[in-house]
Length: 158
Ligand code: SF4
Ligand code: SF4
Image (cartoon, rainbow, N blue to C red; front, side, top):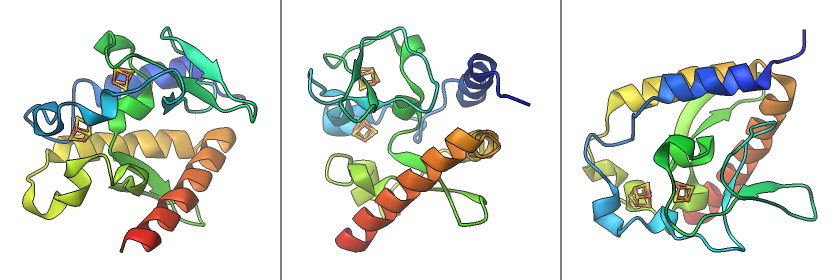
């Protein structure tokens, strides 16, 4: 059965709700370092994820939401809702939630993760989201590729 992506992302956004890694606004720690995009950088859309924000398509087909550092929060893409964590997968498709080391230089939540008390509800929600994504072939492949990249950054940094 083919995936109804619109429905799937609506469900996913509902699960994430207003949850963020901290109960407080982490943007105060770093002057919102992850929202300093320009026309050449952006947050990658997940497979078949649509966005009402401006989208740039790179030569390799990657779709990025580009913003000037401000957006209507209700319209931000999934990548912004889950940063700086990511639902990684192992070779059998089992889902974990790990720091997204691709953002390690940018985000103090990764570099200071030992000292921070996170909101467990965020991680539970992200795990649920990961399990939904892993059921779809295209999304599972996307999670696999991202996991590989995250592992490469992790090996490099640790
Ligand atoms: S860079 Fe990290 S700490 Fe700063 S706003 Fe983004 S997620 Fe929060
Ligand atoms: S889309 Fe919104 S949440 Fe995402 S980086 Fe841009 S301003 Fe930040």
